[in-house]
Image (cartoon, rainbow, N blue to C red; front, side):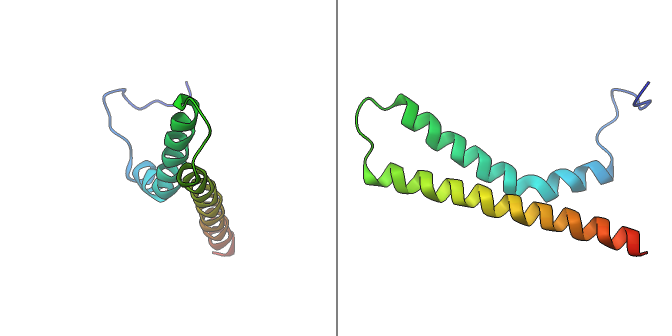
Length: 82
């Protein structure tokens, strides 16, 4: 068995910290998904506002992804150094 914890147990403090650390990325991805859904539901040419929102959302996902990876790399590097 991979995880021997009881299924009624909540997430551990370490798991909650990992979720909290990833929340800015998750929120950016949700915003991007929202824009993509609006584009798919539109029935005509896209206006400048939605195009700009798509561009900003994609940039936010890229930025948050890089920040998340940097935090993960720095944390792993500190653990190895200790």
